[in-house]
Image: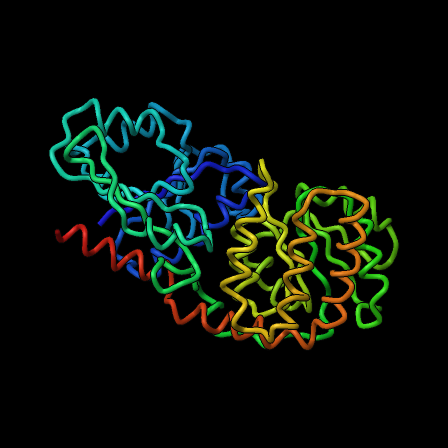
Amino acid sequence: MEITVLCKVVDNFGDIGVNWRLAKKLKKLCPQNKINLIVDNLTSFNKICDQVNPNEFLQEVCGIFVYDWNAYDFCYDKFSGQNNVHLQVILECFQCGRPDWMEKILFDDELNHTVQIIMIDYLSAEDYAESFHKLQSLTRRGKVKKVNFMPGFTDKTGGLIIDEGWEELTPRNENGDILFFTYARNWEPVVNAIRGVETCAGKKILCAAGAGQESFVKAWGLDEGIEVLPFVNQTDWDKMMKNCSFLFIRGEESLSRACLTGIPFIWHAYPQSDEYQLVKVNALLERMKKYFSLEDFGKVAAAWQAINSPESGENDRRLEESVLTMLAMQNQLADGFREFALDLRKNGDLGQNLMTFIDEICIM
């Protein structure tokens, strides 16, 4: 079988991070399958996997065939040969669309076999993830089938990617550093909170590269308590996260990893119009609620909601107080995060669930 994964790199490499992790997992599950990964920005891909050459139209990395999305003529020639048999299963990830050369093959040329397009959507804890999971869609050609496949936090979704090194829960390092990977905002309230908690004294702040780095460094200042990180490859990033005691995290790729670590964390969701990020945040909080006492959950929810609310004098005070409280209680809260992480593994691995689904629809 040949599986082709489509990826557009947006929002600080989160999309390519998920797709690279998924492609490797699919290859490991079924080594006999050919896995293609078509990426629109190989320079960005190189920052999380330095084996990738940004100047090659086609290269093999870790057994995955990596193509340059933008190489129209090259890719058209490669995929349109032999009656288009190279396009069997297409994973269209995060509403990325399809390259023009692929559209030409699927809808302009003669297609003599059925192509299965599986829409891998964004990770969400909202109820629609269960409703949309495995829901079929129409295309303008009968031989091109399309269906949704939803990552998620319940057994009625595809779950999360449980790849190598994530099968078991790593014991939390209570004395570990604090990882900070967020979007931009005024971080002075959070800086004040960190500096006001005795159990954070002596812990280093690891400030990750990305959209929020400059604003956090500005708030913290360049002293011995912070390490400003360059871009880190995926393998090293995973190891670094697991060795921390607390996480401030953003994005889909790092959010899924944070959930699986069992380490206490605060999620800074991507800011959206009409404050829709709070809907997403509250949906995930609702999934996590049962793992905490009512009082402890209230402390977690207060910090998450404050960090995701618009900046104002009043909210900045709420943010500082709630983050300070959560940091001071982090060891007490750790059991709840750990139980949540253990339960997520019971939903199965996204890669395995997806591969089972692919086998089913291809047989049908």
